[in-house]
Length: 343
Image 1 (cartoon, rainbow, N blue to C red):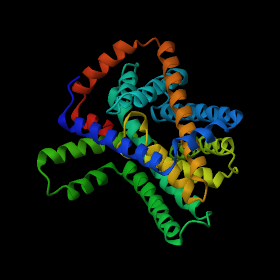
Image 2: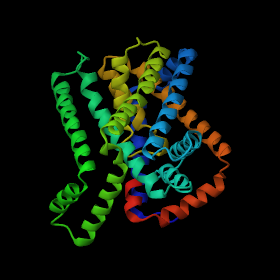
Image 3: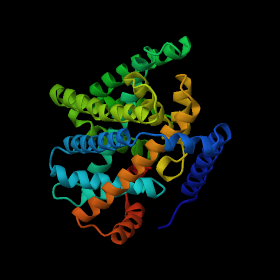
């Protein structure tokens, strides 16, 4: 697979950021203290964390099937999703997303662009939900500064406005293109055409927003997806002998979700840990327990993704070698607008 110079720079940037985050974590907290806290963790709550994360994976597959118009069996899509999640944990350049789109495109009645656009919508919905939940969590945490809670409240209101805007443009495609034309009037024609094509891909994924029932169902499902994740973090808090709190668990979840958006190594090593530790120490929780929770949660999530991915490969009978070779071919042959959406 031929890798562009830009991709190489992104890879080395991610590895550097992950290394700095790990270095910062071990500079603040001694590794021996983290190991001691992990040894004292209660296994039953860690098993609970794993079960909740497995439910989370299943619900994500339910939403993805909904976005694809229910044109594929739930079991098959669940395994395809898990294969992609596994590769995202193990390989750079978000090749897991490419694999998901490629596997969907091989199914009757579905295409690679449909796989890509629905994944873009997934990310968009998750990001909006995190921003929307942030003020609801922060307003309940009295230990945080007032300015931070007020900023989060403003961002939450803005997110509600953005969701309404998405509903409008999903129902008024010509209006969306006219707005893009106006915004892109200073760009070259080639760039403008590319943006319109990307907009069409996004609007195709927002088809569910063209009917209020499907839109409400999609938003409700997106909210439901993150409930087991909150429960997983709550169980992890109990595992490291910290008081259970759904509000604190929600705040930690949001911090972790924002942290993994930063450039990092495959598996979001380092950035996830620092994000969770920063959130927990902001809540007044001990740094050693915060680090042990971050390490344990990340390890459980990583192992679960890999095991679920291996099970998916066996279930739908996909060869690892054949898949990785196909990924190299697919990255080169994807249309630029789709490759940009995945990267």
